[in-house]
Length: 352
Ligand SMILES: *Cc1c(COP(=O)(O)O)cnc(C)c1O
Image (cartoon, rainbow, N blue to C red):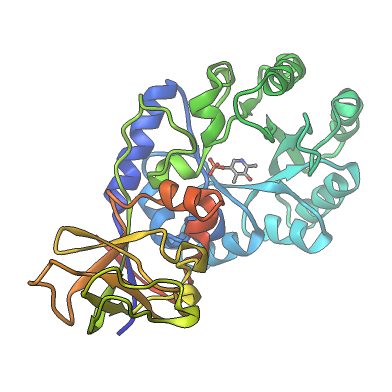
């Protein structure tokens, strides 16, 4: 028995529409990393009719999508880093991010050889210090690339390292002033966290992943997202444990009273982080049952004491509308993004 993941594509669509109404402008959905584990191709196809541009995080995703027959517009949000990537962008008709003249000219040459004109978005570094043209170099950069015949600048964007903070406000001002000289371009800026925390940044088009997948990056109550994902497993064995007995590796938990403990078919190799041992719960037949004992590679243990109708074979949810990804992330001391992309690729995704 293996765990599985249920993905509600309609919920992704309805979250997308909800946020779009909230921001009152366009919204670029981000589907990098296998659409945060929800499945690149199904998610791209679900979003195709509601958006003009979808953001991906690496060129192989473009390849996968194009080979599947997907023909919607794609934006690679990581600036081109090699000649090979430039050629693939041309080949697969991907709108490319740029932050260096060398790559801009390699891209233009590659496009020329294929008799194409490639759309590009310029990435600006306002403080993340990962990629992007430095603010003081932007004017010069824009002047230089003007003369490259086979690229056409269509957008400009940046990325915040922080949520609400005075630093973000400063970075916002820097970006607003830089982009004000390029009003003809598509200007995009906030990610999910900044979309809900930095109202100013909504002057520009957001790029959102997390929000459309139903998780809140911070505690903002005004948006009610639909749950998208359920992580499920089965009960494979039930034990009667006496008060004072322990179980699983390290004996990290000892029964306080006579208990019924169920073994479930999911472990840390599936992405259920071991640090959640004794700190998370599962839902069985509508009951919230705590995880007790150390999570194993392929199995875990839940306390079903008092729920006498629970049987071997029963379905167990580890993530759902009540057991939220963002709460799990907090307990595991990480971000919801990492929880989602850690769910093993080989786990079957069922679309509902
Ligand atoms: C991943 C990413 C996003 C989306 O981030 P979320 O927190 O999921 O909204 C936006 N912009 C860039 C550049 C990214 O890498």
